[in-house]
Image (cartoon, rainbow, N blue to C red; front, side):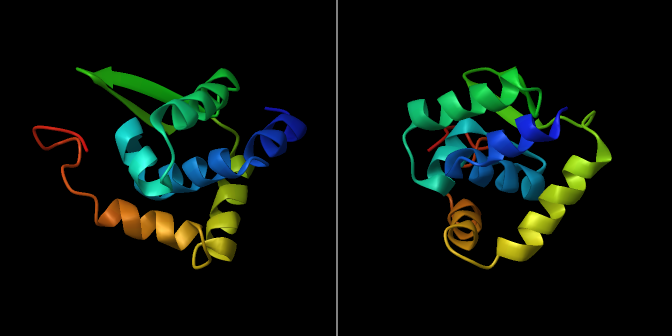
Length: 115
């Protein structure tokens, strides 16, 4: 992974917010990300697709849901950057609000129906 590709990818607010939520949660369904970020499903899915194309995230399908997680095969420096970003901005808006929204989300994917 080239540093310019990584930093270019997380330069967009939606992709950064998704990456930080995934970094904190290990794996999330698209519906969880849309709920937490407060954006439409097509918007979030488009940005997740870009992250997937770059190899930053991987996905798996479970029934109707697609779950994403950060690619565990990425270089260690990327995880260090994400850890530092989460520590630096995790208490600020919109990042803290994203985590709170996710924590309060009803009908998480392990329930019979996703929100």
